Structures are given as structure tokens and as C-alpha cells.
Length: 294
Image 1 (cartoon, one colour):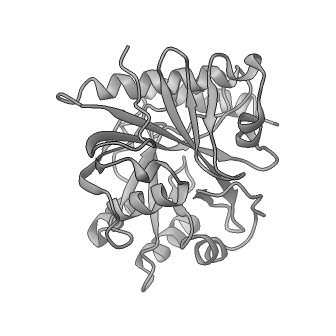
Image 2 (cartoon, rainbow, N blue to C red):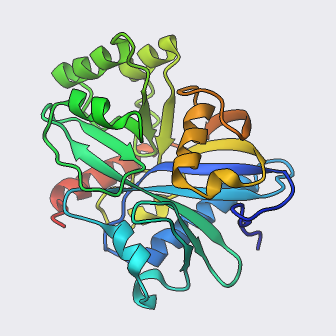
């Protein structure tokens, strides 16, 4: 099996494919190792569609919801019941990027983050923080406080960008000097829902729209992890994977949000498919019949 190379080690300059799922949740319907296995499988499946990739790295942005800290449990875990054959190779501090590996060669990177609900009842993703974030504050509070040191994403959700809430998102997109966040799409948006007003507004202004898998709190949704995201090409000696801050700066540079980073990015694009109508109706029905309480 092709494996993810340890790009944090010193060595000659190389080019690698970087696959980033920007919106991952874990719910304990299954061991955490099942989510990791699914993510690696989905990353590998996509990597094999790219012509002659020299190597690839898969990165999961693990978004905690209120009252959870799976990242901390993952970092501290010594139980095979939780992580299976996956081991933590190293980490930096309590909120740094984790490098996970299997003895058989598979590797993944995991970045912590938080998903909060604003006072406007909108979701905000804060990628790159392991600290607890208090919810139910105005959306401006999170944008002003976290955009400089994290990657902040305003993610689309079913029915959440309609009416007054949709107008709030549109106002943020068009606000002067508000270029420090991106919009988020996800694999749960059915392909029939092809037009999103705010995505069209963002495109006109050159604001990136980045996808993630966004598994729902429904049994079996962990299989989506790694199935939607960003694909980028990196040229360098791997230094961007040594520190989470370096990786986030490189990623934001690739998206055109900050100045040039040390690593070169030939291009970036999105990958993954949207749900079919049946899967969309089934997952939304299960979500409402059995709301997650964890």
C-alpha cells in the first residue's frame, strides 16, 4: 500500500500532494480508529487519481463541538480500543499538529479546531486552536479575535444561510477589509442544491470556498472523513509540517489570504462529491429522529 511520507523530516526538496479535509467531526458511534481508517482510505483513493504523485500527505481538521475534546483524548490515548493500530508519532504542545502512523506505513496529520454557534445561530469553524471557545457571541467577535492566528471558516449548512442568517453571511462577505476568512462547503450539500447565493457572491469577490466532509452525528457518517477537501501541491523540504503555525500560514498563503510562504504552491483546487438525493434525505431524517446529545 502507498503510504504518506514523513514530510517533517529533513531531506532534499521534494514535491508532494497535500490533501486537507477542512471539516471533520467525530462522534463515538465507532472507535476513533475507524474514522482514521476511513480518512486514510479516502485520501488514498483520491491520490491514486492524480497522475504520478511522488507522495501525499493527508490532513484532518478535527473540529470539536461544545463539551468535547477528542483531540486531547487522541493525544493522550494509550488504548488500542480508541486508536486501534494508529499511534501518535509526535506533537508540539497541547494544540499542535499531531502526526499519526501505523506500523504498516500509513500516516495522517490532525489539526485541532473548534466549531461554535454564534448569537445569530450561525456556525463558525476555527481551525488551529485547541482551546475552549465560548459560543453564542456575535459573529464579529469570532472573526475579529481568531482570523489572524487561525483559519476561520463560515460553513454552509442546510437551511442556515437563508433569510436573515443568509443576509448576515452576505454582509460579512461584502464588508470592507473583511478578507481574513473563507466560506465552507461540504459533502452533505446535495448536488441538486447546486446554487448557493453566498458562494456566488464570494466568487465575484475572489473569496475562497473550501470544502470538507462534515460528518453528521449519524451512525456510519465517519466513512465520509477525508472524502471532501482541498488538494494542493507543495515544493519544499517539509518544514511546513513541523509546526502547526507554519502549516496554517502556508495554507492561508496558498488560498491568497496572506503573503507568500516559504513553500511553493503550484495550484489549489477542491475534490470530492456531493451527496445524492437519497443519502441527503436519509441522513437528514436520521439526524432529526435521533438528535445527537453527546
